[in-house]
Image (cartoon, rainbow, N blue to C red; front, side, top):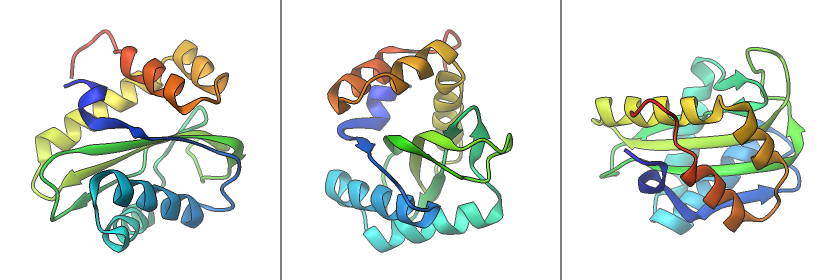
Length: 154
């Protein structure tokens, strides 16, 4: 699995400010609706429900919100770089500025886990995160993140 199979160029955004997790989830749902014709309400609700189980802020300024939706046929993602970091209740208590959201079909256990592991390994690379933080062009961010593959295949 490659990140380019999950992430569409139009699903990469730079947000000047997200005032809350709820607002961020609204923005993510809007992008997924526009890029993949997902139900806005279903995407937003699924993100909220998953986050209620525990934070998806994994530390190091990174959050990996994810959800399962019944009407999807494959895993899709969205990547946002936040110009103003957001308090995300992350495990290390640091604000988040890199967000990679995943949406998977309800029955996609292995595919969902492989995608989550791939994104997690990719965003654990400190030099990659520095490149992402240094760029404000969505097209360049897409190239940086999709060309950076972790050394262990998912």
